[in-house]
Image 1 (cartoon, rainbow, N blue to C red):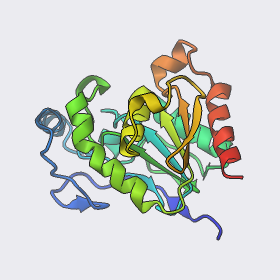
Image 2: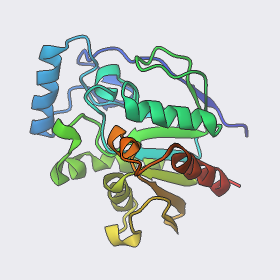
Image 3: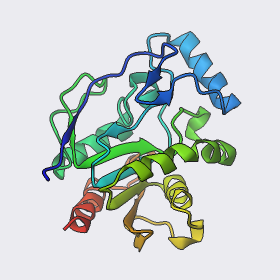
Image 4: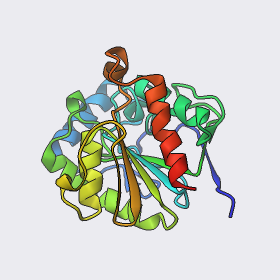
Length: 226
């Protein structure tokens, strides 16, 4: 079966309805709800809601990040869209054949994912890009459900240690089941898990993560599908 593509596009602003089965009005994490309300008051035309996964459920690769950035998925409604991390991720996916089209920060683009899906460990933007352990645990059932519905899933790419730890817990494993570090790879629970440094502006500016080093992660993901 040929992999299906997933079309891009900016999601509508929060309106109290559900978007892609993720409740816009989720109130399980009070701190995140308050932060969302503050952003909505200051920028009512932003998404300001949980950022749902992007990509098809029949993809064989799942990319898991930390949480939507305030100016990224929280603003545009599409995960990893609107900030430097998003530019780095989508440009790398296009370069490695996991996406096609031309990325735009506002999400009004023709990007299509190819055999991969993108989500975050926490679906709402946290203050300072730092969700608490309780917020991570509260949102983790969404990640468990997402993995469970991806029947063809073979490779999981984790962007940063928070994503790695949450994926391991979502798979029913302890965090010591796989060490951190860029390029660390392990086969567990029926999947190949590949960890990368997060493609944040900070990691790029300090040289902790390079363009070629990030590309290598997705070259490894491609090898895991062969």
